[in-house]
Length: 156
Image 1 (cartoon, rainbow, N blue to C red):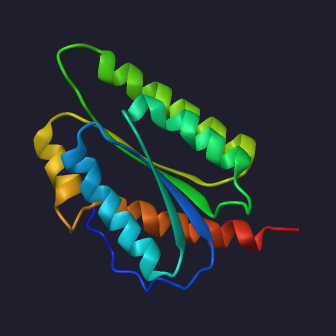
Image 2: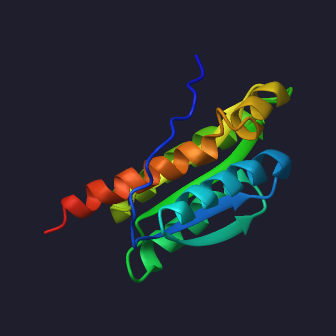
């Protein structure tokens, strides 16, 4: 069952976050992007947004940001929408992106919030991206803020 977004008391932060967002399926991704940016700004975070052509291009940019950012990022939010078609192409893209993002976050010890959605159809995309009650961009920003606090508490 699809969970409804929770209203959060955005705790203030000075952290900087990056958002890597696909331009493919822009109608859906743009709605997630706006929600994520608004939530991060509400918390006082600095936000750097990088747009890429499609979901498959997200990991290489996330890796560069994780490796090269000074000061260290509080987190990297990855936003994309992959809609299944008649072939297995979407499944292969989704698996490759998921594996790469997991590797990046462990290798660089920077939270990588994975909201590259592999969906069955446009109805699912509308519900998860355009409906404010279920917008996964908002949820991604809330997760990024929480993970930044967790990681900060673990610093030596």
